[in-house]
Image 1 (cartoon, rainbow, N blue to C red):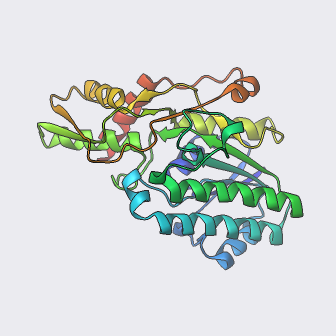
Image 2 (cartoon, rainbow, N blue to C red; image 1 turned 135 degrees about the vertical axis):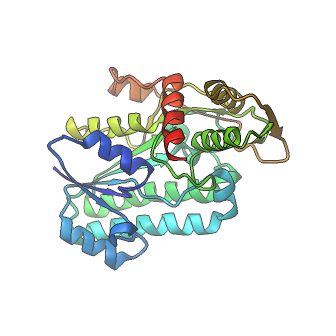
Image 3 (cartoon, rainbow, N blue to C red; image 1 turned 180 degrees about the vertical axis):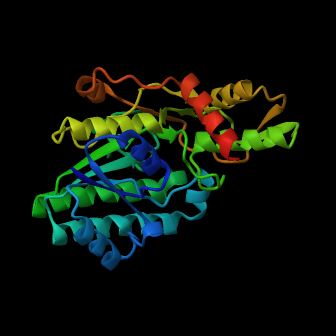
Length: 307
């Protein structure tokens, strides 16, 4: 199969490439680095004509930390929505038989929901801290249904837990939450800081998915031709830990002697974000997720090597 990974040089893209290495699939990586700008319709359409993919994994997004997506809410909303519009329009024009795997962040769930089940995805407003990014992801889902209705384009929408792991940004403003904690703490230890500041109270509960696991799941879907999954479907462990517990675990692994200070003047985000995964467990009964302990340790080792 000819697989085009949009955002192939980013966080998810690099982990996908590691997972597909040695497979029988032909992988193409495209991003602005290669001249394919999803905000430029002509550029994207030319890329599809040139590569002629059978399937697209949409690993491209304008995203960042909570601080980043709050500060840049309008730009984040505009860019991510425009990328979706251009993608579906180009596929409809070039080849509507191209399939799409579209990962969606679980921040697209209503902020008031604790256990995020698929049936509740539309039952409330997205938390204000992520309204630009979360609503853009929902817009992508709506576009996928509209283009399926009119053009028959098949999309698998995967709602994933908060991700962490190797190959993310090294910019603290753009990296994902757990990776940001790990990077900042490594740097604080290098600087021999006596205090480590954490945004908010530390009380929010978050579920985390190790990005290499997400890549394995996507490959599993493709290899086993699971094109008729529930749409959307949650992908995760179904268990969360508090930000405070996560910070303390990173501190312990680094053997960092410092005081943890929680800046309660900073936003917490939604109080609880844990996915309901009954459908996932039914359809992927044998999948084994990387444990938090192992994933955090491996991520720390990765960032120690690149910072």
